[in-house]
Image (cartoon, rainbow, N blue to C red):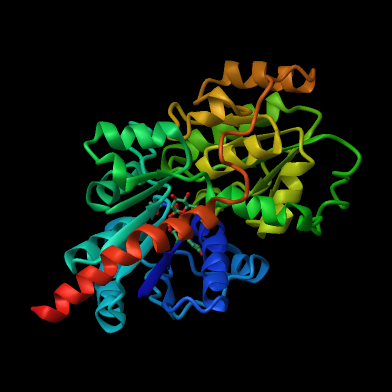
Length: 376
Ligand code: UD1
C-alpha cells in the first residue's frame, strides 16, 4: 500500500504532523506500506512554512512542488499540473488531504481524475459563505472525496445532507488539537515579549488575513482603529500575515497600542494565546485553539464553519460590528466571558483513530482495487 499526504499552507502543517507521527508508528511495527509527503509550496518561506516543519518534527517533504506564485487560480492550476506528475510517478493507492486550502482542492481533483482514493481530514465543514475561497475548496473537495474524517457531528451531518453515504463518514475529532495537545507544554516566550512588558500587563492577540477583512486598506485601517480604541490601555499583539502586510506597507506605525510583529512560529504563537486576555481573529483554526485553551475569542466574520467553537467553546462572531467589539472587550476585561467546554473527541487521539480506520477498513478495498487493476 502506498499513501501520499499533501500539505500546502500554514494551517495544514499542524494537521499533518500527528498523522505522519502515527504512520511512522505503523512503519516501526512492520506494517508493509510506504508514504510520501508532498509539500505543494503554497506557503514557502521560513515564517509561514519552515518554522512549522522544524518545531513540529515534520519530516522534510519528499517533494516540494514550489507552486506559490500567481492568483488563486494560477496557484491551483500549477499545483494540479505538478501534483499530477508526482502522482503518476509514485502511483499511490490513497491520497490524504487536510483542511480547506487551495492545495486541498487541487490535489483532490488530480487524485480523483486518476481514479485514486482520497481521504479528506476535516471534511464536512461549511460556513455557507461562497465569498470565502475556502468554502469553495471545501465543497469541491467533499463532492468527490471517498473517505471523510470529521471534527464534529455537525460536519458529519452536513455531509449526510449532501448525500454522502454514512459508511464513508467517520467522526474522529480534530488533528489540529492533537498537535496542540502534544506540543502545548513546549510553548515558548517570543523574543519581543519582555521588551513590550507583556509579562506585566494583560494583552490581546490579533490576527487578520481574510480577503474580506484585509484586501481594502481603508476598511483594514478602520478595523484596526476600532480595535485599538476598544483595547485602549492594553497592548494588541498583531502577527501580520504576508497578505495583510502588503496592505499595511504605508501604515507601519499607526496605532500606539497595536504591536506589529512577524508571523510567529507555532510554539511562540501558542505561548501568546495561552497568556493573553483574548484573541481577536478571522482565522477558523485559531477559534479552535482558543476553545481548547479556554481563552475568549472574538471572530471578525459573520459566519463560521466551526459552530462548536460558539455553541460549546469560547468563540463569538462579531463580524464588523464595532459596537459588539467594544462590548465584548469590556465583558472580557470584567472577567465575565461565557462558560465553555471542549468539544467531543478533541482529545489528542484523532490521528490514531484516522490511521486505524484507514488500515482496518480500507486496506482490503485498496488490495481489491490492486488485484482488479492487475487483472485488466
Ligand atoms: C491561505 C489559505 C487560507 C489559510 C491561510 C493561512 C487558500 C484559499 N487560503 O490564505 O485558508 O487560512 O493561507 O495562512 O488556500 N505569502 C508569503 N509567504 C508565504 C506564503 C504566502 O509571502 O510563505 C504571500 C503570498 O505570496 C500571497 C499572500 O501571502 O501573496 C497570500 O498567500 P496565499 O497562499 O495566496 O493565501 P492566504 O491568504 O495565505
